[in-house]
Image (tube, rainbow, N blue to C red; front, side, top):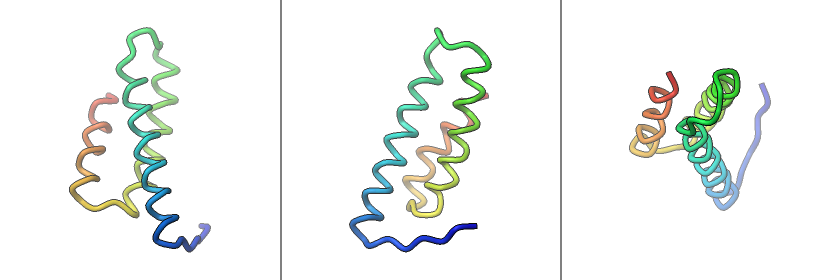
Length: 73
């Protein structure tokens, strides 16, 4: 386990980066041109990024991206 301290501005930037990364992965998951192993790798990465985001996100925002976890199956 690694602990980090962020300023408020850094926390907002981290939040933004995680959201944009998850948005991009959700877009990739909907791409029919990608095959199973690639989508599986994206899905595993999405779950990791989502758990990171869950530590700093408000519940309303979190529920928006939790839907993406269900879309990956």
